Image (cartoon, rainbow, N blue to C red; front, side, top):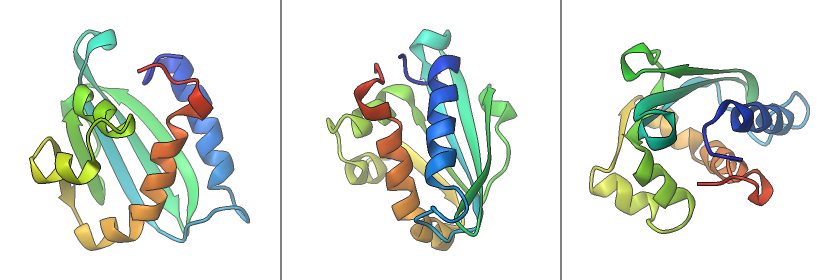
Length: 135
């Protein structure tokens, strides 16, 4: 199933909400996270964004939208071209390299972002949908 499509999104959100459900969540963070994927080739080169809301580790909502200008403000935002996000998710480029070379940009409360690191790593792994994600 193609990464970031509506079909993929439905499955990903269900899996993420199950992982970060009350009584099951491996996290304790309370924050909002917005991920912006720019220049998505199979979506006409547009930006698709995901807004995650966590309350004491529970994923209370995930919204998906189109257009970089429409992306909501968040405690922490990651922003990059689709190709670089995919390279980090497939292991072709380390996240550290993508960040230090400016391929992925972060903004917001970086202290909160550091607390989010484990949660972000779990979400990143879940985006693979147990091998069903097509990049």
